[in-house]
Image 1 (cartoon, rainbow, N blue to C red):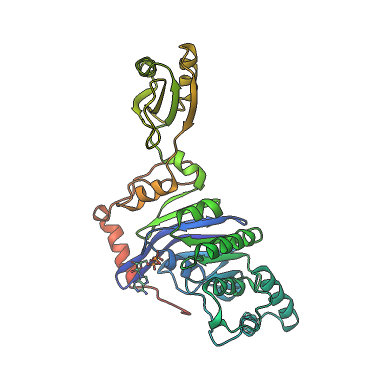
Image 2: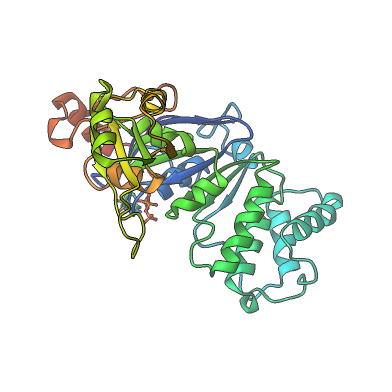
Length: 358
Ligand SMILES: Nc1ncnc2c1ncn2[C@@H]1O[C@H](COP(=O)(O)OP(=O)(O)OP(=O)(O)O)[C@@H](O)[C@H]1O
């Protein structure tokens, strides 16, 4: 559905986006995460044809954005961070205006507007003036204009930013529904939003993708060691001795008391066990404890949360790049180590390209 091939964008000697390379298949809902200034908006503006890449290529359903901008843009619905609304217009008049702008045939306009109004919960508000709408309803209208021409691909730039908690839940639900028929790329700062909505996450930092994968599987991929939390009944010394005898176990941390105000129990121990590597050690622990008559009351694999991963990747220069295809760690080059060739390439890029159709 979307191919972003080696795309870079330079802003007057400052790099906005660097060698961005990813593709999206039909039906995916991809979360685009990154700290402020990482390059999310720049990338989205290039995908939607509002900004020309300095280098690289963007294909929407096989159509090159550079060669066939009009056709390619017809396949995209875009909700910028601030929805492009006209405050003096009514909801209905605005959607009619957008329908004209998108060349939707007159005979189809009523049906399309009706569908969008229905889908986005705007029914009964067609005559309302936009400046009187709440932020949540403006966002709904922004989404309605984005889907009016029935695009295959939706690009949503921070669609829930600035909304109150109730509006956030409503807009997320709408995005989830839109995701059943559209391929969606959405940028956000809110990590749980990615877990709730997306089947894939792209984390970018300093203009580069530093991680690409399934939000639920990332924790396991990122960890260098397998970790298990355990609650075991029995004499503490005995348990620790038995765990230490397992060759796969590297470290055991005592985690008591398990809840504030709860006394450490002499009967049970809460522990965090780390393996020597990424091997699953749960079976080995289970059989050893069973053999020694030390019942396991609870055993759970500990994963890094998306928040841990995000902080790990964005709080300093990324040193590890993990791709969806096999979690192969590569070293990302710190800026000072870039080759002269790379620097020369950047200088050349700085002289090319520019904004278009802004
Ligand atoms: N028009 C511009 N001129 C010059 N530099 C720009 C311009 N737009 C963006 N940049 C720079 O490009 C980099 C990426 O900015 P971008 O707005 O794409 O980040 P973002 O990830 O969307 O950030 P945020 O989460 O704050 O919206 C930043 O360093 C920014 O300062």
